[in-house]
Amino acid sequence: MKLATKKDIEAPIAQVWAAVSDHEAWERAAMRRGVEVERTDKLRSPGPGMAWTSRFSFRGRDRKADLQVTEMTGPGAMGFTVVSDAIEAVSRVELIEMSARRTRLHLTSEIKPRSLGARLFLQSLRLARAKVERKFDAKVGQLAADLEARAKAIARRG
Image (cartoon, rainbow, N blue to C red; front, side):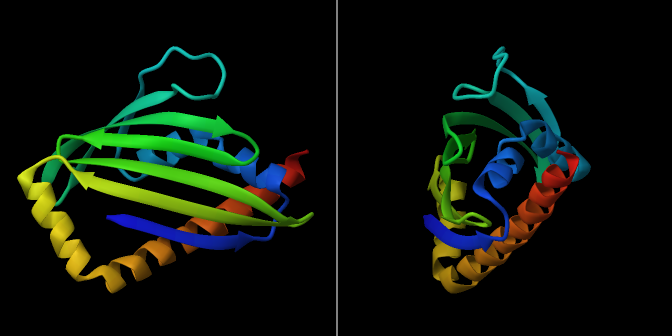
């Protein structure tokens, strides 16, 4: 199942990139939501190959997922994969400079099942595709608003 959306952010691309590529902030945000996050790579600087293992509860069951950064060409694009027992997802975040103070965020995700249960779950999502796309768009809109606020905070700090 493929999902894609675009959102405009009122901030320069450098500030948005700083917020998008702040992996420690993303780790803290996941932990605030009850996800156990553990960094599994040994890289000293941000880039492709960064990896994490996460444990969380979803639909009443404990789950585990591995996330790896596959692309990081900043300020511009970041790609990553998420692999669990049930699914494999490939996502890409692109930042496009619209003007000196405006950046477009383009987020694409493709989710593939790795089990029969996941295949049935994704099939049910396909049947409700319009609702799923609306929710995805709303969540990315919320993400864009958060990125805008974080970018402004980064600008105020220096």
